[in-house]
Length: 295
Image (cartoon, rainbow, N blue to C red):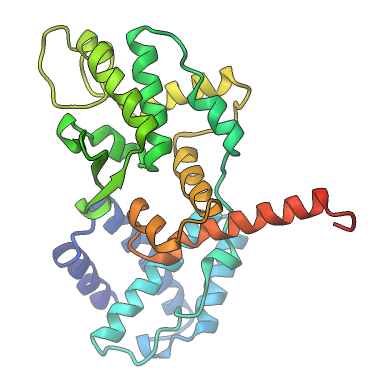
């Protein structure tokens, strides 16, 4: 079984271009599962059933693993079995009908539209940092970018005339994401008035810079987000990924189709995007409970 795991890791690395971090995470998740199976006395990959997978996942939850970790394990094992089925190593995928999102998922944290407006309008000054922060928050919400993708943006990533950007996501895959008029206007203001102040005559292709003219780090962005979240009374409710969650949820609430949202987020599997439909349904229930006379 471990030989099959090695073959799968090579397949992900060579043919799918999966990042090193993802490879290591999947290898750990699948390796733990195979160790559990061997401890049960099962020697062949064909002997594993859906019941074995469910028992394993339940054990992980009892051991205190987070919902995110359990869900990642489901994704890793499901992908492993898809590969085995395609390679005719097994006949069936025992994980095919196990839905992590419904069984163990913790719904992502999102802000209401009103809360998001308060947050992205918080940087109200005219200084270089204020203009940069306003552009950065607007862009995070307008595009749903991961923080790692935001850090990697260059001035050449933006098509200023057409109003979209090229994001480089997981597995080094590129995707096109619309920016929107509001975010583009604020971004233009940053480029004209603020970014030259950070550069101080130096040259850099990185889009968002710190006061030393170097690219912002994850920690730097988190500090900026936390600063404004505290300022508008949302401390403890906001982290950088909240923008991504809110972006997707608000699009779906507004009537966007799931496939379009999947493309903008850069999700390889639409099942990952479907988590946001659970969020919108929860909000509908909340509205019903609050306003219906028999809710």
